[in-house]
Amino acid sequence: MNFSLLCRSRSTDLNLSVFTTVKELDAEKWNRVIGNENLYLSIPYLEALELAVDDGTEFRYLLLDHEQHGTVGVASVQIVKFRGSNSKTHDELCFLTRKIKDLFAGPDGFRVMTCGNVFSCGENGFAFTDDLPPEEMLAGLSDGLAQLQKTEKASLDSSLLLLKEFWPGSRNITDLFKNYKFRDFSADVNMVLNIHPSWNSMEDYLGSMQAKFRTKANAAFKRSAGLTVRSLTADEILDFSTDIDRLYLDVVKKSPYTFGTLNAKAFSNFKKYLGDHFILNAYFLEEQLVAFSSAFAFNGILDANYVGIEYELNQQYAIYPRMLYDFVELAIRMGSKELRLGRTAEEIKSSIGAVPVDMRLYVRHENSLSNKLIKPIIKSITPSDFELRKPFKVQFG
Image (cartoon, rainbow, N blue to C red; front, side, top):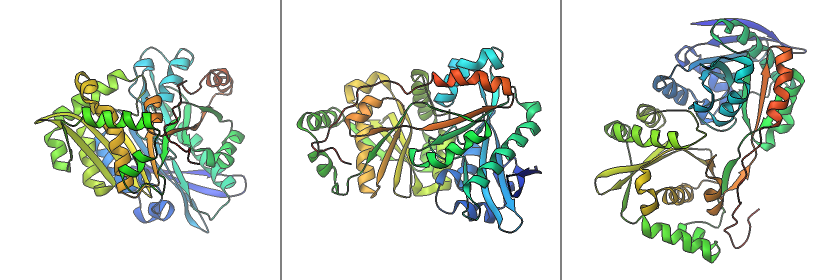
């Protein structure tokens, strides 16, 4: 099913087409806009995600067409139900939900519209061509999302619209959303390790560390020596689905913030549809699967994603530290320029060299009064405090 709306920017009319499933998209138009820039907006990724998610999440895909230039913009929207502090969705949304649920919703939670991806961190909500100025495109997108909200109002419990989430280098553009009554805020940081050009091996990486951090790394390798690590195929992921789901949910239950709940079926789909762009490494103790890690690889970036851990064995075998060092080794081996480790566990991630990067989000409520009530709430949202470690002999710029 799809339908069309007319959204008008300040000086240009844009026709907005809305689709409810990725299979309805005109792939040629969509790919013309995104090119090879964003794996999380690629049709194979979106199709794999849509096929696997069965938690009530709904998807909307937007095409912005211009009479002269054709398709000039695309956007991915997810409608997700949040249930306060026990939500299994994105962290800043959990926080925001807890704070505003008394204002906008009952105890059963509410459904909210997000332009972006609640299952990944980063600028994965929309993309534009260079045919029109970004000011016009943001105006058109903002108007189009507002009209989509009104169209979907019967199925939404709240008129909140969230745009997530943007890197510092994009602020000069994304802050233009404030012209359309969006309010910005920062949640927890994304921990990022820049892979230094001199690191051609793990020996190079470890050699750049101060002695105490290199000793810590070697201790983790020693304690985890009994683990066997193997990259799984799509079929093998399904073969181990029971253990993968159990280990993953153990992590979800312990973490106050999560990146959305997936399952082995989703991971298998990612491997099937994305091939080498998705990696799931399984950690075995003898023949028993005791942990797994996953990551997406694209455009010189290794984006670490979901993990699962047998917590009773974690300390004895240094499972989580081993995962982090394995991510570093994989990034070096793949020639990646950047390793993104996401949120949570900031201190241990900083001990391997990752640094915090502030991520900006934007939120708007359709009702003017409610939008004013949001202001003091989002001002109270700040990144978590942690002790930043500096493991390298020379701090790389």
